[in-house]
Every structure is written in structure tokens, then in C-alpha cells.
Image 1 (cartoon, helix red, strand yellow):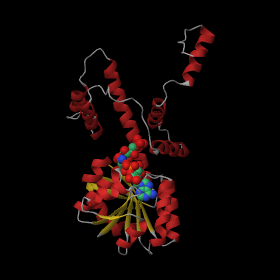
Image 2: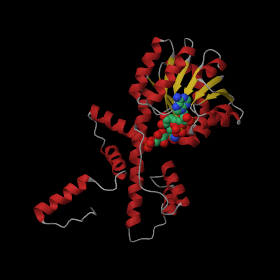
Image 3: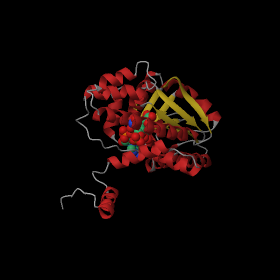
Image 4: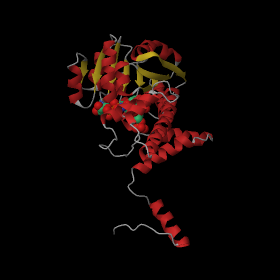
Length: 300
Ligand SMILES: NC(=O)c1ccc[n+]([C@@H]2O[C@H](COP(=O)([O-])OP(=O)(O)OC[C@H]3O[C@@H](n4cnc5c(N)ncnc54)[C@H](O)[C@@H]3O)[C@@H](O)[C@H]2O)c1
Ligand SMILES: O=C(O)[C@H](O)[C@@H](O)[C@H](O)[C@H](O)COP(=O)(O)O
């Protein structure tokens, strides 16, 4: 079976190799021509434009998008449309907002193009060696390409989640959970860091992965990070985010569902991007106003 893949960054490149290893005839395209040449060196058929990609794929085309979420996905879909035929299938494997996926499903339906939204988890190693995929869209379209999801995922690592949007919705909530779990692990190690004991972080993370309640891949990655840099002195504690945690919180608020841990995890990420806070200044000033409590002066 042929699979076209658009977007050969951290995820798409590895996914293309995964597909090739599973005997798919992959045709790969990216706006970054260096990535296209590089994937070509791996023995994968390349395309430098979406037109060329579509020409190299026979009907019923299956095209997997692995590009940054947002307007880029809409741009790629628009650019593909003139070269597609009825019942071709577009799979968006990126971290798109599920509301965008519902909209794209409906828009593509009008053109007779099938659309599946696929939440893809497992990071870059998952993309290469076996991912976890959660897929929304029409059941018959899913059935047509179910083998692809089965082959690129770990054993039992793919699920048809239902109506259009539900794949990305499931991935969004997964990432909300991810935020909370990571924040919790981080806070535990911060307590260790400030304690009277000389805790070996790497050994402790490794220990926690042997029989403890909190054993997990994230704990394994925690151990890996400490094995490279025992106290993470080489990096700053600035935490960026791509949007999925925020969308989880927004959705929970719309549904009236309390998600305090996920909410605070997001707040901590935003806070980490500030060296000082205006709210801190206001509270310090107020304590000084009502109680004469000392404030720390900043350099003007
Ligand atoms: N990195 C991860 O661990 C991870 C895991 C799961 C899902 N995702 C999601 O997968 C998607 C891709 O992530 P990534 O980490 O590979 O990003 P990336 O930035 O490494 O790669 C994106 C690629 O898309 C290409 N691209 C951008 N615009 C394009 C266009 N118009 N046409 C063709 N190619 C275009 C870029 O050149 C780049 O090579 C994102 O939605 C991301 O959120 C990432
Ligand atoms: O399941 C996964 O493989 C990850 O969740 C993956 O999707 C990615 O690493 C996130 O995009 C990071 O999200 P933030 O940038 O929001 O932390």
C-alpha cells in the first residue's frame, strides 16, 4: 500500500521510516528541501511539491499530514485539493485542535475527500518504533486504513475513537494528563532538591521504576534526564507549551468539569516564562502598605 507523508520534521521523518520498515511505499514531501533530500537518502520516494506527491500516489490516495497544528494544516489541505480525487483520504496525525478537525472533516466532505483525525503519542521514538494512535472519523474510512495504524503502532496501541474530532479530542485530554503527571514528578524532585538529604535523583527515579506505584515512562525519562545532567544545571526551568493543555482546560471549563491539577500545571508553565511577576510586586506592596512588612527593592 502507498502512503504519502507531508511534513518530515521530528515526527514525520521517523514516521516515514516506520512506514517503510513496515513495507509501505512511502512518498514524502516537506517545504524544507533539506529534509526531503535526507529522507531520499533513506531510500524513500520523495516529492518536492504536493502536486508531485499526488501524482506519485495512485487512487485511493492516503496522505498523512505531520505538520505544525493550526493554519499550516489548513494551508496544506487547500494546496492539496486541486490534485485529489473523490474518496482520497487525508489523515492529520499532528496535535490539531479537535474543533478544527471537526471543521476540516465537514469541509473535506463537501469535496468528497475523506478525513481522519489521528492523535499520535509516544514522541519521536514512538513515531519511529511504534506509536500510540487514536483515530476519529468515519468508521468505514478507518477500516480502509486500519492496517496502517496497526502497523505503525505498538501492540494494542491504536484505537478507533468514533466520530470526527474524537481522535484529536482524546489526544488533547491525554496531553492534559501528561501536563499534570509531569508537574507532579517535577514537584516531587523539587522537594528532594531542597531537602536535608543528599538524594541521588537518577538512582531514585530509576528505583521508582522498579515496583513502585509511580513507575512509568515519564519516570524512566526522568532518570534518563538526570543521567545526562545530575542536577539539570545545564538547562533553564522555562517550560513552553504547544496548546493541548490549554485546550483541555478550556474544554473542561466549558463542560463545568473541575480540573485543578491540569489548570495549575498550565499556570506553572506560564509562570516559568517570567523572571519576576507583577502580581508578586502587588502582593509585596500590599503587605508593606497594611503591615509595614519589608519589601525587596529592585534595581531601577
Ligand atoms: N514532537 C513530538 O513529540 C510530537 C508528538 C506527537 C505529535 N506531535 C505533533 O506532530 C506535528 C509535527 O510535530 P513535529 O515535532 O514533527 O514538528 P516539526 O516542527 O519538527 O516538523 C514539522 C515539519 O513540517 C514541515 N512543514 C511546515 N509547513 C509545511 C508545509 N506547508 N508543507 C509541508 N511541510 C511543512 C516543516 O518544514 C517541518 O519539517 C505537530 O502537530 C506536533 O504537535 C509532535
Ligand atoms: O504524546 C506525545 O507524544 C506528546 O504529548 C507529544 O504530543 C508532544 O511532545 C507534545 O506536543 C508536547 O506538548 P507541549 O508542547 O504542550 O508540552
